[in-house]
Length: 193
Length: 381
Image 1 (cartoon, each protein chain N blue to C red):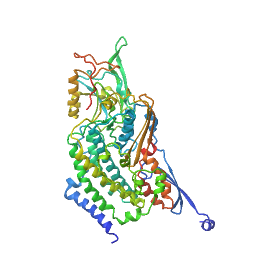
Image 2: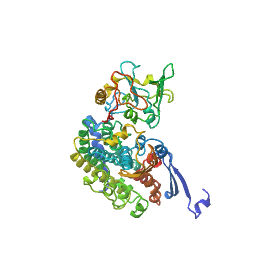
Image 3: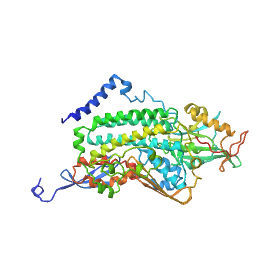
Image 4: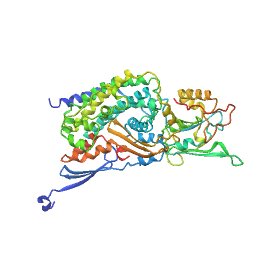
């Protein structure tokens, strides 16, 4: 019968319509966003942040410049700190990430030998202006290691375990050595998940 | 209207530029159409609005650094793009992939095929005028798969999940249950989808015998993917090449008879059912535990800028949901590829648009374009 197929199709839409009223749990899959928020997954990655231990001055980053060189869109900009004699210190004086350019790939986190940079869960970052307000400086990027432990407990456990096994801060790199710490270590196999 | 115009013997041709922002063009795409009344006598696709210099970009950075860029080629199927690129680099450097990683890869590729075909059917119906009901049903199902991608890879669309010699991370806790749930419920959703669409008379009259693509033309124009199979050519790289572990699964290659828009629609529905079969077999066979990244691959992932594949060239290809997706790489032994070339299925499939549209009505051109299944990120690169 001509038109039967249309009616059959309409029965599907009718069924879905009824379902959304009778069983809202099954029928409605949307979330009323600003009021309700979905829990993000643990592995969700958005934008990178820098990790410090204790005080913001005690950051893990040693300004080795690896992340900024590996970054595909080149959105990281680092200048190492210099002391009074002009010698390069293992600490960044400037550490800028342009969030307008960052494409959330997470490669900086993977290549960092000192576990200093991780991807954050923050996603409400809208700004009225796209140049200076989305250029994040060192002060904006620094977050305590406890924040990382809170948002990604599984990864935190794994990374802390490998760090404890090595004794310190990752492997020694030709670009920059491990920062001064009581137990200095040598080369160890790359940490993989 | 003057007398000469009415009585003139010459056809009054009208040139219309459809796009570049037409709602049904699936991106920034333009068609220059010459019309005789409502019939198309000439059609010229205009593309390049989304050109991002993908190949040149990749030639100026390390091998791993272009992995996130491949996500952005065909932004609906980022996992299969990763797959093809990873395969090309693995061939180039001779990296082997562990067993469990192979299974995870095929799992991701088949889920991506489900996403792509579901979305395509939704948007095709949008082009036909069934405004957004089928699309939103498609989105609802896709959402479940994207949730799984997010839990596994960290991102919903731009997954950046594959690495040379494996994958980035193992499935999360509870990931397998999530997949089993998706696979269990998907054929029920497809039944619902078909009840809504397949026997619908409006869809049939708009799609049947519209935009017929003959077998010979399809082969001559090197069309691949579901469009080729809808024209009745049995060619599926999963069967022909047997890459990765596709020889371990039993599945059929659905073929069309006429090669019209309806066949292209229906072949995709059938392909989704075959994908579900593959996934069911895969979930039974998949090893519980195992390595997910080989040692050689781990070295490449840890310091990409220092990693140098040997000089030579390689071509890695897979059956992406849209057709044959291939990456051709030439290495000169340096950390950057000397030449990086993409063979995008969308771009090559769009070349026959004019042949399919000639003699059809202008409203059908939109439907035919929808049935070709292009993503402009891949066409323009």
